[in-house]
Structure formats: C-alpha cells, structure tokens
Image (cartoon, rainbow, N blue to C red):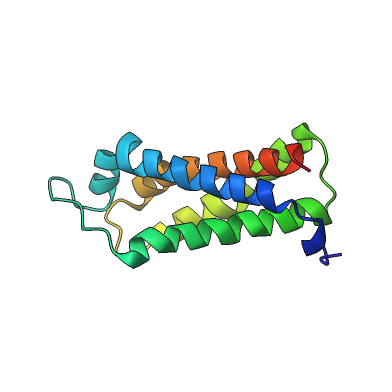
Length: 138
C-alpha cells in the first residue's frame, strides 16, 4: 500500500512545499506578526534574530509534511479536486491544527488558545493547498 514513492509527482511536491514556505513567510512575518508576539508573551519586544535552525527547520518540517501528504494522496488514490480538499481539511484540522493546540497547551505558552487560533489557519490552508496541488498535477 505504501510503496508509492515512484508514483509521487516530485515537481508537484516541490511546488506545494515552496508555496507553503512562502505563505508561511507572509503569514508569520506580516499577517499575524504582532498578535503572534502577544500570544508568545513577547509583545513590544524585538523579534529574535533568525538562526539557521529557525530558517531551515520550518522548511524541513514543511517538506516532511508535504511528502507525507503526497504519500497518502497516492496510497489513498485521491484523484478529484473535491476529495483533495476534503483530505487537506482532514489532515489540516485533524492532525496539524490539533497538534498546534496540543503543543501550545503547556506552561511555556502564556496564551495557548490564542496561539493555536493564530497558527492553525496557516496549517489548514497549506494542507488544503498541498493536497489540491498534488492532485491537480497528478
């Protein structure tokens, strides 16, 4: 069932990963920059300087997430755009969104629900985008 690596459209995977990474840049640096700082208890303080881990880490995680979705799209034989959207929502809400809240619910996050509400939409959006790109370019 999961011997589908040869069937994955690698250019589609790359496009979905790059698009997700670019959306992350816009989402976290522009759309929610100030509320994000507030959710982390850092309102009014300068953003930490980027490091190799904070730049490369999200890219690697995005690649792993997109690859996982590509494997599942192939293994589940998802071929229609509607099914791709449903799959993207299922993964985005059921795994990525839920994990965002689960990670935030600890004493290190002063406003965990706010943090989740700011972050989860990005993961749901990019999960749907990834699924649609993978299916459309199949």
